[in-house]
Each structure stands twice: as structure tokens, then as C-alpha cells.
Amino acid sequence: MKKISSKIYIFLVFLFLYAPIFVLIANSFNASKSRTVWTGFTLDWYVKLFNNEVILKSLLNTLIVAAIASVVSTILGTAAAIGIYKMKKIFRSLIINITYIPIMNSEMVTGVSLMLLFVALHIDLGYFTLLCAHITFCVPYVILNVLPKLRQMNRSLYDAALDLGCNPWQAFRHVVIPEIMPGIVTGFLMSLTYSIDDFTISYFTHGSTSQTLPITIYSMTRRKVSPEVNALSAIIFVVVLVILLIMNLSDIRRSKPRKKVKKGGTAE
Amino acid sequence: MDKNKIIELKDITMNYEGEPVLRGINLDIHDKEFVTLLGPSGCGKTTTLRIVGGFLTPDSGDVLFGGKRVNDVPPYKRPVNTVFQKYALFPHLNVYENVAFGLRLKKTPETEVARRVGEMLELVDLKGFDKRSVNQLSGGQQQRIAIARALINNPKVLLLDEPLGALDLKLRKEMQIELKKIQQRMEITFIYVTHDQEEALTMSDTVVVMKDGTIQQIGTPQDIYNEPRNAFVADFIGESNILPGIMHKDYLVEFAGNNFECVDKGFSPMEPVDVVIRPEDIQLVPASDEVLNGVVENVQFKGVHYEIIVRAYSDTWVIHSTRAPEVGSIVGITLTPEDIHIMKKSDVKKVNYFKSESEAEASDIEQQI
Image (cartoon, rainbow over all chains, first blue to last red; front, top):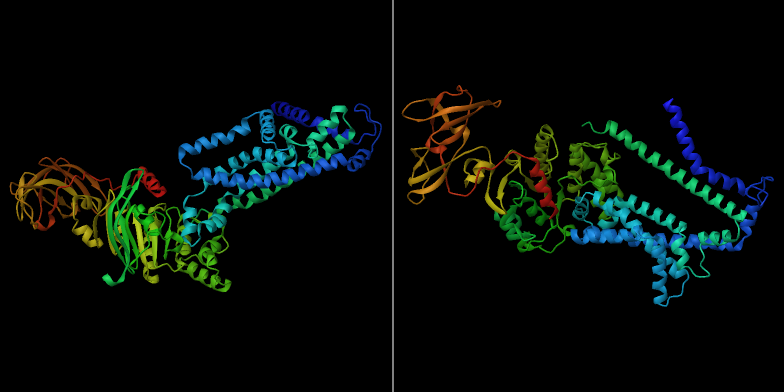
């Protein structure tokens, strides 16, 4: 009895989570513009989507900004994490708390304040400001992912590298970087997704030529929800799903040999 | 002997956050010598090793390699290699790549890398482990890889920082023998840091006993054990009875309410001294008026001998004997003059020479300096 009720419960949870998305996907194939009547299957909306210059342009904007912002913030964030790690205790906790602020802070406040800053500095809103804003909110995610990896690292590893003939730069490249790589990758992926996803901050900091996809979708739905948006959303959902699957599968594959080690590796 | 001095430390001092860690270390290390820095946690032995390795720069004093000052030479330019306390193998590289690490940096041709890595793995008895992940190895195996990784660079001096600390007793004993063998086969200098006095006595040519950032005594294991310079060394190396005494004149000392003949001289008349007596040097005889008498308080079987605690006069004596008297019985204690070691009074209290957890922690802290 218990088992059945728990299964029903899980089913309901997933239903609430995914029903809207399936409705959306179904609608993207609906020949009618209405969201309530099914008048037949069509791929028209997808065709229209790929002929819609505004959408394609903003998709390109989003991808370019996300790529540059996540690469730059990964480099900046990793360097910052190393700097913080080497700091004295008091400064370290101070700086760590400061890096939390952009994450905890309301996006609205971050967006408005960035816009005011750019205006005060007489920088025209556009690609550059958008990029700066994205880097600003991505850096903390990289820092907070890399820092724990540095803390987990055996302190002697760096010494050992120097001892074996590495200069500090080589020790960093050959030993420290591989050790903290998982943190760097996670930080990079988080930056990438947050940057692609961001609406609020982009809304305040973009210029007329640098609309990102979320902003374009938002302005399209302001008039009425165009079925093209359904098609676009469906594509985004599928892409994210595929990426998630690939990541999970590679995780499983990576963790499998480790388990074998634990079984047979401890005996001397 | 002086000709082949390979490393010299001259008046090294070192402070950490205002606390002196080393107060004037003078030490010569010779070619092909097995030197052990021995002392309790916080005595500065790891700090000394890290100064030799180049990871720390002393506040004052000079480090000389072959007569040349190397204070400011970074670790990667020194002809020494280190085996770290927790091995510090690179987890992202397999066994082969870990050992090859130093050679790769020197851009050694691949065929030579393969040959030398093979030799090293054979030396440490881990042939065929090339492709294994280092996380797959046991503590003892990781230790050997750490040694191979250091030795492949042909260092003139190998520094070892409590390398056997994480191993169990049996493995530790095996590795002690193996390390000594490797040192003799490679014909290089080893500087070895440990707080385990038995380890120091087993392997070393020279033992350097340290305490509170100063060197207490330098000597062969036999010297250190048989002729400890002060009560601290006597107590730290092996077990000792340390009794308060008064030197009446040359060759005559008073302690435990009696006058004893001894072999020491050169103290001022009536100088208070520490009298050090090894538990195994004490003879138990039937109680009589001729000898010092005491009550047996406790008897423990220790395998080779019994450890007997005797209360005599106002002192507690530890005595090792192959025969066990009954607890509560009265026994006599006799000593020959050679068994009585007189030391200048020091403020050293009993030292705990058994390893404790706080010991390991303290040496961690020392390592982080």
C-alpha cells in the first residue's frame, strides 16, 4: 500500500514539473495558433522560427556573449580563487563573503546598479556592457567552485612539484591545474548556463543591437505568445536534456572504474 | 671527514608568527651519510628539513651546499629531492608518469625515460605497476613510488619527512630495512626526520637530537644511547630513570639517600645534578642493609623482559629484568659505577616518547609553516 502511494506521489511531482513543458512541446506542433484547440500536426512554426531573423540574431548574440563571458570569468575566477586561497585567514573570509554578495543579491538590484554605473561612466549600452555584466555575475560561481578544490588539494603537491624541478609556473600548470580541473569545469558550465539563461541583468545592460534570446522571447510574448516561441522553447529544452544526459552518462562511466579500485586496491 | 661536507647549516634561526622555531642550528652533513633529525613534535626538525629543501628561507644564518651559500636558491634548482610526509603523489598521473615526472621536465628522451623508470620501479620492488593509478596502491606502495619519484632525479641528498609515519608497525620495520638498503645501494646522503627514537637508532649513521629549536646532541646511535649528553636526550632515547642528585666531589654522587661511586667528574662541589640510569642496567638483589631497598609496586610482562616499578627512598624506579619479583615484596637495587650517568641539571621534565595524536597534528602545523 505504502509503495503504491509513494509511487503515485512521485508521479504527481513529475507531472507538475513536466506537464507544462509537454504542453508547450505539443503546442509547437499544433497547426492552430490557439493554445486550446488541436487542429493538426505541423512543422510550420519551426520553419518560421528558422526564418525569423530577429530570433536568430539574438540567439547568436546569446551564444557569443555566453561563450566569451564564461571563458573570461573562468580565467578571472580561477586566478581569484588561487589568490584568495593564499590569503591570510581574516582577509580570506572577508573576500569570500564579498564574492557571495552578487549571488545572494537580487538580480534586479545588480542589473539596475550595473546600468547606473555604465551610464555614470558614459559607456553606451551594448555588447561591451552586456559582456561586462555577464562576467560580473559569473565570476563568483567560478570562485566558489574552484576554492573547495584548492582546499581539498594536498598542500605538499605543489611543494613536490617544485622539488622535482618545476618552476612555480610549471608547478601550477602540471600539478595544480589538473587537481582543480573539476572545479574549473563546473564553474565554466555554471557560468555558461547562467549567462545563456539570464534575463533580468541583461535586460538592464543590453543595447538595441545586443538583444539576447531571453529578451527577444520576452518582447515577443508581450504582444501574444507566438507559436514560434513554443518551437524555440521546445528546441532549447531538448538541447538541455541531451547535454544533461551526456554529462550524467560520462559521470557514470568515470565513476565505474573507481569502484573497482575500492574493492581490490587496499590489500598490500 | 671534513673534506666531503655536502651540506652545512650555520647559525640558522627561524621565527613563525613571532615564535622562535629554530634558535641557532649548526649542522654539518657529509657525503653518503644517513642523518636523522630526531625530536618531539614542535622541536623544529621538519622546519630544518624544509630549509634544506628550499621551501623555507631562514631568518638568519646560512645554508651551504658544497661550500656555496644557497639561501635564496629555490627548491627546483637544488640538487636535493624530498619524500613528503603524506607521499604527495600526483593523483592525476599513473605510477609511471609520477616516477617520470622529474625526467619529463628535463626533456629527457622517451627511451631513456622508459629505461630509468623501469630501473627505479625495480629498485623499489614495484615492477609491472607502471599503468596503475596511484590511488590504487596501498600506503607502503605509495611510499615506494614517492621514493622512486625522488631518486630518479639522481639527487645528491634525499630528504625524508617522517616517511613511515602513516604505515603500520610491521610494514614500518620492513621499510626501515629497505630504506637503509636503498641508501647504501645508491650511495647518496639521506636526511631523515622522525620522532620515533627506535627508527632513528636502527637506520642512522648520525643522529641529531633536537628540542625547542636547538640541537641537543649529535652522534652515532651508540653514542646517543650510551652517552646521552643531558637528561632530555637520555629520556627521549630509550627509557631512563632520572633522579635528582648532588655531586659531592669527582667520582662521588649522592642520590636516593645514598652515596654512590661513579665515573663522572668536573662538576663543582655539591652541585645539584640529574642522575640518569637505564632500566636494564639495574640489578635486583635480595633486600639487605648493604644495598638500596625498595617496594615492588607493579610488574608488567613486556615479552623480552619484565618492567618492574619499584618505590625506593622517595623515587620511583623503572627496572627491566628477566625475573619477576612479587608485587609488594621488598627488593634490593645495585648499580655499578659505569651505570650511573651524571648530567648537568636541566629544566627538562619527563618526556612522553610515545606517539600521540596531538603529535601528528603538531607536526602537520609545523609542515605548514
